[in-house]
Length: 522
Image 1 (spheres, rainbow, N blue to C red):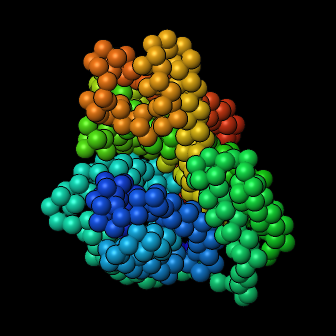
Image 2 (cartoon, helix red, strand yellow):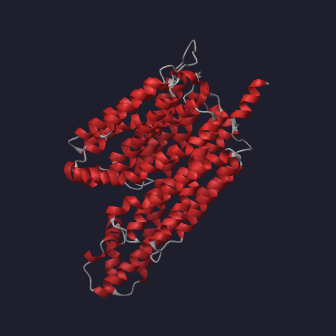
Image 3 (spheres, one colour):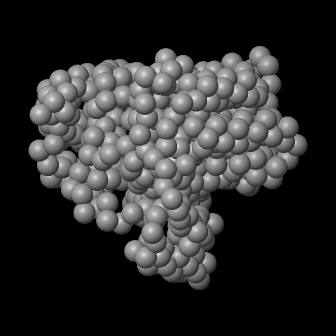
């Protein structure tokens, strides 16, 4: 696909993209703040996790499909469709009268969100040169970071002063505005016409169940069912069958959803592996840092959402600086530097304990944010720099897809690591405690993760004599601190592996606009 830059209203398209990306990103953080209120009104506590899971599964599954279709049919119509689906899903979420309804509507909303995010990045790749993308990357990184910072605050404001319904309704006017701007701005989009367009239906119908089953297994394994249970074996076994069939069909497809030959390209293969590894570590940090801040450092639950602000500020600043660095240095240099900072951030966070002050924790988080800010936009720019515009939809979607899968697996793996170490620490504490009162209290709490965390939050609710209570609280706190440290140390291994991958990206760098003009004149 090629686009005539003179016929595209870049300002209008860019404004529409910024609005769409901001509110789509905002949705991922704003809902969590409102969830206690929603549960109180709709009930359904036992299934409320599906409100997030449904969105995640739907958005992740649709990404590679919409990427390929946009290469065949253009970005404009698919972006418009995605925005309409997201807007309708948002409106329906606001009308939900039960938790089951909200989960279904969130799945619909996730389909739209899964179309908007990769298409936004693809359109940026279409309308800007590689040099321009590097200069703009700070803006787009800031959009993601800003949404994560103000999402919890805005969610609390809306819930407290208006109604939880408006965290969804706010997407209706903004979604329509974004869609209108993109529709008009890309009016003269030109598409590389093909005489016969072949839709990879077999690929679609094997990829969707394969990814859905994989995400379901990763989400609920070790929670709703044991990892070695018949349920787990059935789900992951079916996943392997569907994904194996997908690989077979992709090798034979004329227009495959995910062209496996792309992995022969060194930059495509290494950047996707790197994105996967970053997702493994990054999403774990995002999930566990607020828990540490609340449980160990005593940050109030109402302020928990704002604890990610230092990380996001570090990410925004590094994204801006990283864009400038890419104009001078190779992708490999910037990516390796970013992974080094991310590794350092995880190492520093693994040293945190009950004596760590909040300022120190914020500095450690900012270091991790710097690493993320250098790596995330560079991955997208590097892979887009490597391929013609006729393939941008597929390669951009692949980059988003592998990072999302990495994030889902990261949450699952790190959660299992934390639970294992917490259980082991509590079992050791039970065996070593000689005081019969404390021994029985620890024995009764050892397998109660929720109760253990609630004791960290509200120690005054523990009904024991003062001296015994202080000892018990200290024991539980040490168990949690060690468990959190094990999570961050595990993250170090993922990110350190990413350093090795980053070093193998190759010598590629952005070709400056002047260089491209010189090449054309030869």
